[in-house]
Length: 208
Length: 207
Image (cartoon, rainbow over all chains, first blue to last red; front, top):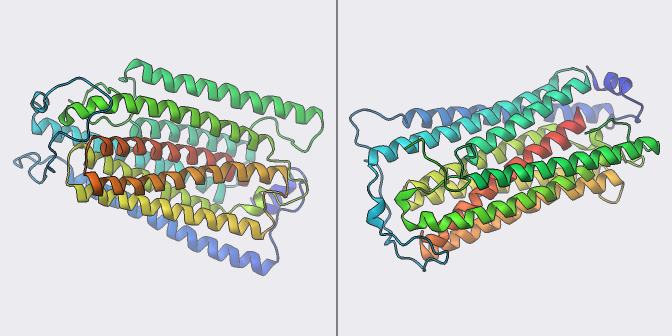
């Protein structure tokens, strides 16, 4: 749906067009150019990530951690201001390198999942807003759903938040989310309602 | 081993780091408390933006001012920087060489700087179309929200520079590791805030 048709359908907020026709055309050309660059970057990122992902698959016969150089760290640094249990390094060195390697692959995959999901969940709403002519309300619902999913993906795969957390950490995050929801939704509700009753130029039911 | 229980939110250093893993625990939890209060701050600024998005006072509105291509590129840059910081975290955790860790961090910094460049370009373009903060309530709210995120990114970049200094001066000791771990959380957090910004501000405004 064209911009003109949309603005005709959704309220009369004045003309939203931008400048003279030739200017608009120029901007559109530049826009297409930038989109090509953006998509190229996205595809390149996915390909590069896939390359690394394949290289990270554990191969049989290669000793784990063979290509790694451990940087020397003496274990003693500028003191340990946060206390902590006093244990010797040797107590921790019982982990097998193969296990460590496996864990690294696992955590690397976590980041790959994160960026892949985030890319898809970014491309969908941007693509829809740019090209698809679906009604505004459904569009907003789809955009919002994608954003929520992307938030979950970021928390899960980048910040490593899951249900195997120590309990108070997850509670901190969930309680903050609850507070955030109450305050933000409450504000939007009350102020939106006020605007409606006062007939202020804020003609939306809630949100956006 | 992959079924480990996380001792603190975020990537755990793990037992191979010895007592540093214990030292990180308290600091990381404290940093989460800070980040969550920062999230509340952002949430309230979001609420004020949403409630005043139609208060354009006859001035330019979202459809006149926003550039979807620019917002898209900024999103990709920040997402990529989040991923490269993740790679830096893995390099730290699994004790790859320090140059490799610093390399990932440098890439992250460059992506962050590119993001800021695009954002400044956006603001200048908006101002040239009459979109200045004092024009309307909507624009005041916009410039209260999006540049606030930009300031956070600037702060994170400066923190990263400070960490380079620390790595150069002290090497990867406990405090440096702690700084990298916390900045990783902060960086991913800023990416999450950006998801909310491009959804609510840019896509919501242009839909």
